[in-house]
Image (cartoon, rainbow, N blue to C red):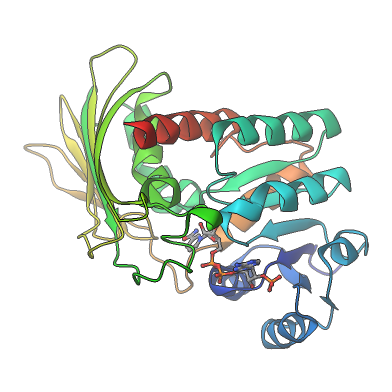
Length: 321
Ligand SMILES: NC(=O)c1ccc[n+]([C@@H]2O[C@H](COP(=O)([O-])OP(=O)(O)OC[C@H]3O[C@@H](n4cnc5c(N)ncnc54)[C@H](OP(=O)(O)O)[C@@H]3O)[C@@H](O)[C@H]2O)c1
């Protein structure tokens, strides 16, 4: 018997979709079996490059085709809700790029629809599925660093000051916190849980969009703290660590990618887990969707509906401050 295939469709074949498509050959069962774009030519050339002849000039055409088992929604933020709704309404499982939508209310509505239809929905926070990230959480669960006390993480890269592009364009859901704030927040949420309190300060551009944000988060119990920073103005080192009463966990730079992560306990040899991969690393979230959909789940424990809601709540609070 041949290998089981999990057939992916891509909606919006742009920059991030390329990374996703090029990672699929590294997944367990994933293949690209459809590409939909407002431009048939773009869908066709993307499909040819990544190995499928199934190009669609409408998104409806792809979700109605019977050719895809799940869709990766990869248009800018402001389109996520309508794109994911389209899939869910047609019973097609969705991996929707982060942020799930541009605001908490819309995310709640989308998650309600997933529940109502009984169809899988996951915000594409790929970092939450990486072996390096999972290993850190496993060490914490095992009590390797004792009681976790504090974590810190940054994530930043300069974006062109072109207000028509999505990074700084309010109509495309621009802003550093909305776009990349979820990465450091995810690290904290997965270690310290939900019900967090956030305090933030930001640098805003002339159109009111936040280009850099620093935030301090306290856990619901008040016993743990976190410091995060995101920027579209400069390349930050992208380092992350989690400190506990008996040791610490340190990610290699670019912690949000597949990297090495180390367990450092005073008096003991440093333990290093190598989470690197030859791809961009999107196969792990593709495998997770495959696993969940095959098991009949409508959400992933790696990044659940409740995680998306908590992140959206915190981002909205930070943006208002
Ligand atoms: N996980 C990650 O590491 C990561 C990294 C970067 C971005 N992202 C996320 O991925 C999403 C897409 O980002 P991207 O940089 O890949 O986008 P992009 O390349 O600018 O655009 C992707 C697709 O979106 C559609 N699109 C773009 N601009 C549009 C506009 N003004 N009006 C209508 N449609 C438009 C186009 O689809 P058609 O071909 O159908 O016209 C395009 O092919 C964002 O939500 C972002 O947060 C995630």
